[in-house]
Image (tube, rainbow, N blue to C red; front, side, top):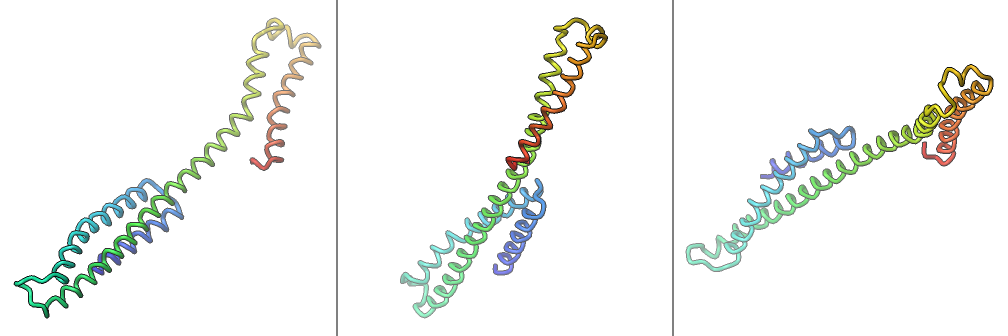
Length: 176
């Protein structure tokens, strides 16, 4: 029994290391397998504890009073195994919490980058959509006149300056 709890402990430690290095879906599967193993062990050990407690403490005609010492010793070992199993179960739960936290942080970083890209390109999309509505006539005529060239150049400059200014503002606020 001690050997299997030591192997379980090592496996949980490996899963925890993997969670900190690079968590994957396989890591999550391993953690769930470990949690199931500790739960299975708990289901086996818990009822045995009560049986051995009764054999060690109560007076039964088929058990000699001198033999109860051996049952107490076995009971003490079983209580120790239950404690070790509870510790392993808590370790597995901690590994799961760490995994979920690490993946949530990674997802938040990805969402942050995607949001920044969207925020930077939103003004360009708005300006392109607004000035692409041909308010000033067909685009060939707009670029042919000096006012049209200034208008197109101004809109292009505005389209370049707005995301650049927003990026600088985000850097100043330490969002990037």
